[in-house]
Length: 253
Image (cartoon, rainbow, N blue to C red; front, side, top):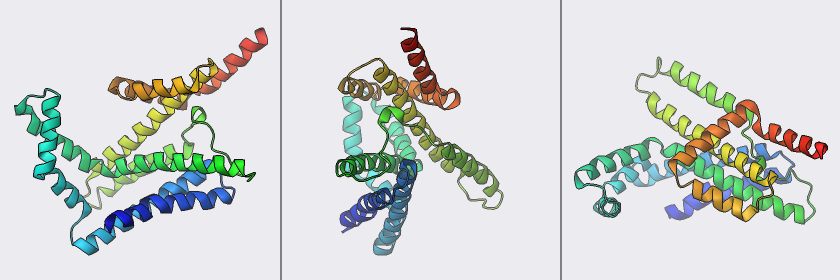
């Protein structure tokens, strides 16, 4: 029952939203924005329905699952396999569950962003092949964070600090933690797209580019470097500078 409900609300509804707004000729950023917003609203409806049907908050259900004997034994097995000392395992598991519950909204939002991006790319290719006049989704190497996103983050942060004076129980740290998680994710994707653009400008094969980016994403240091590259791209427009340098080199030849 709940599986069907979450598929409809969180997967099918955003896909339908993307389809409709793409057909209406909306820009890519608008189509993705509407799709993500639809998915967030769908998740809110699902959480409300879950509460009404079970009398339990979804957060409590997730917390209870990660404290179940099955989950604990599974995590202990993974930590044992990784060679983590037994006296450290409880601390690590407690911190992991706390981090998960704190950043759960951000985890869901980033997953929804990826889902909507992929769905929009699929629909765009299908419609273009059928001769539909739409705003085609740019290739990943041209990914750019809209300026309005930064403005939105700033507004939310300011409102959060203001709200703490009117809502004493507001968990400001949790809100900031989720915002930082999403912000870092976007900067990481921005940095990856910049590296993909660099490889493209050097004539590197697309498959090799994807493999390199996938491998680098495994390492924390690589993701940090991607975030820094993304921030530099936003601040200084490195991609535009690369394009100008390539044009100048061709002119010199």
